[in-house]
Length: 416
Length: 178
Image (cartoon, each protein chain N blue to C red):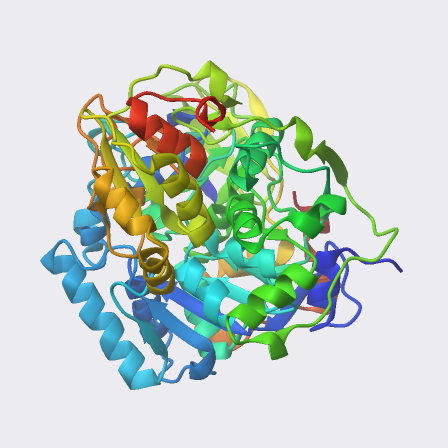
């Protein structure tokens, strides 16, 4: 029987499973971040476990509140350090980067099964890993037993043809798709990307697309592995981890979406739901007090290159704060080497340490009452950036950089 | 199982985990009683003063979308809510709520108004609106998850069974659920 990519990956662990089945599978990676990790540790301990099944496949990331903005969160970091030391799990420190970027750089490979105590764990689907976010109980048991249970999801096929026009990137595509599907349009489903457009779609773009699969409710956002995957693994010294995994022709898809990238425009998601999406022309002129370029969605080198290209020799608007946060230490180093960071600083930007930064309202860019932010992140829920009296718009790095110059939401095609 | 009785607190569509418990309170996550005081405050500002033990939280479309923070169902449970009734629910929140032993019942919540007295029969799968007089049915919780729910959540379940025990007749276990 022809299999979807989701059935293929889960079926390589539990032969014969198909959509609707429950599969208990061994985990290739279990990870936690610092705002959900402490509860994972407590639930692990409450369950009576003392040993992590495979500590070499388990890691804690200090990224959401790192360096810590409060003594309570500092104490949570101490708890995670102690647990990692006692159990032999790995730990990534302040400034190493956002968990999802580090998972892509260091761990994820085609065919892997990954769970993390963070909803954007789906990011690793770009590398053809069945990766999904879970709560603290599930992750605690995943650490203890080295396995978890999944219901094998039905899949939606997203067939992509053509190529992006200038000024349009993967972020615009995924915003477009979420606008079309709705924030619950793919609840419990696997999104599987396919088609002739993949050949030219870079890994950073794929990561940005998979990252936001969860914003349509999906369990995973999967790309088949191909030469782009192999090249990315090679760049990160992991070519041996490559294997070819793709869906069978004739697999059963619950829904099929066909999109020609040539027709996608720069898109903006309006407050307060991610699926509240319009072309950038509908947002033109909306004043913004903050621009935030970074996160697990769009803090990669390619994103910074686009933003630096727009900002080169220009200044950010005097009434708009520009915050730039590379997604990992490696990206920060590369961006320094390529001169992007210098460009941002000269443009008036604040450079934030690699991590989640302003995305979730804990520190480093909390919005004031009535303020609006144009962010390259993945969520614009009410209160997300620390203040329910503020407004968050989501867009691509190109749109964000163009808007930082004018102080209002701007179509990047006007300045390219 | 049992019958639950309480009043409805209506929350509407698209209640995200940031509505339920905002990220800005992450510093309170290791102090759950303090964290729970902020449950739902960005969606229903007077929630903490209104909620009583046994009440139902009524969602609309896509309840619990967003973050994987299990603190969201935890603070709802700590505030005294006995079950969540909603038209649809986000994937991670659903699993987290069941893992915390709090029922999430998928049903048409349009006919429920804020403050209505409800009676939920978990065995029959029905909600009787004692104020409005209507009766609606909800989709049953999938079998395997029902076992976890009935045993008080995932941690008590694993303490008892030491592993995931999925009887053959429960696979595909979700065929009876949503």
